[in-house]
Image (cartoon, rainbow, N blue to C red):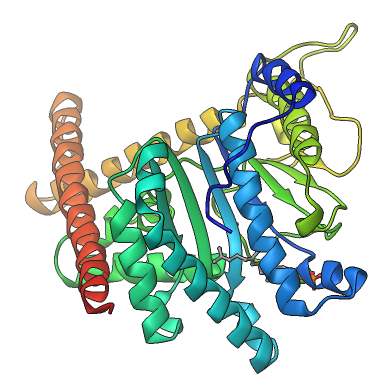
Length: 367
Ligand code: FPP
Ligand code: MG
């Protein structure tokens, strides 16, 4: 089975897709593809066959996403915690990955035709060396494609990713590229494996489990979460449509503050969690402020506050403790912001180069 499964929607599916596309469509959907082993037990096939059918379903789902104009998909293919499964199962999943990434290299032309860029997010060093090399070769082969994006989280957990981002920032400070005071939420986001992608608009978990299992914890703070009971290998076009409809109802409530009759406008963001949990329930359509925008404003405010604090300290050191007048202080803050941005940009370039060199070096070792 190839990565992009060719095929057309039937008439009813096409009609439904067009109706859905008349509304807001998520630009980035993340999947926790859960339930492969339960599917295998249900169908009396072996576990490996369950995972293999799980991959086939991924290929089919990617096609549906493209047909629904969803340009970016992120999937949880192998968690670091999955290393604790039996040796036989882990080896089976590694073999499946090898087979599929080899297949990906054979399909380069087809992926180029569709403009598919495939990225792998995770700690590759935890994987067998031959798989690391193969993955690197596959990632390098498609990295210039830019029409649609598939991010495969492999040897991934969110906490590992965040800890790694913190280590990268510590490296930047050690190298003298950034100052400790440059560390911020925004910079941490840029150091994550997912820094090239917008945050997911919609996260879907199959198999009825209602938890995130250490997947994209940082990136989904404002995403719509949809939990569906279907086992992943049985996922259907209609399950995807159902999730998109739930997103659309939720999207309306987040981005277009609409009042129900007789409702007073209260700042609901102060009384509700930052995301709306949807689990086989009627979608909520309360007036909620634009959570993402509010959060970005807050980040900018925090950055400005940090710049003011740094400048105050600098002026204190260089001005014999005398307070600077307001215009001088403002000018100093502006100049400081410009220098900080340049520092951070150089650091991020260095980080990108470090990661690119790691991948290119690995890819060159692949046989
Ligand atoms: C979760 O079901 C699924 C996995 C741990 C593996 C998912 C992997 C694939 C779908 C193949 C992807 C491969 C590539 C190369 C992208 P589970 O095993 O937890 O099943 P259960 O919940 O029924 O026990
Ligand atoms: Mg599971």
